[in-house]
Length: 272
Ligand code: HPA
Image (cartoon, rainbow, N blue to C red):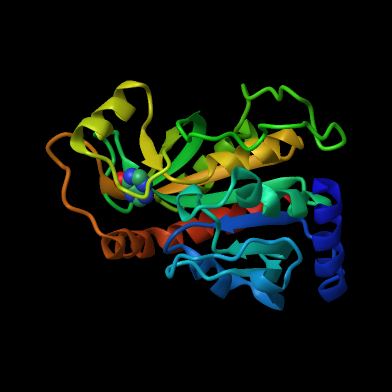
């Protein structure tokens, strides 16, 4: 069932764009600007792709964009699916299965997140070096498809160490403030209470958001290499917590967006 659905989506995309992509990219809230740097050859609406869910959040455009970025063939998800929208974890992660089916073995993920580390400022970037999954459902729950990956995937190397090091080098070369840390995912759609921010910080997270972990898990299930980076759009640090709206998140993300684009673009040029 899942395999057939993946195959149908893959065949459809190949019929529109036959070039084998070098990398997959998932863009987070307010972080769609990377697309302006792509020499676009093909754009496909999610609604046209067999078995693809359709995006419901206004700030997310639901399009698959294909073309060249930094000399490499990329396939970009402009708009992703979140658990709070009502999708199942299998729906949320289906596009990652399809990217893998298209021959991609490296995925680059961005997101907007609340910062929990006192060293962070709004619009800073944080490279993920680990995660804590607080989402209430698991994308690998249910029958395991052995041809895709193992029943009990190892997660001790969830985020690729070489990608992290190279991204830090790129940031330092370009004088971009960068953090590295642990991302926790919650279901949302509410942002956290002060007590929840404190709790998530105490259990070991440096940032909190509502995405990325399902995609990372499914990518690692298929042994894809994963790079993920957060834009800190608001602070969950005691004393710095302010009321935050979606507009605030998008505004903070847009400030960081050029630096994020630069890092992902150079990283892809170096590794893909
Ligand atoms: N919490 C959860 N998700 C988020 C936040 C936050 O503070 N900011 C952006 N996404």
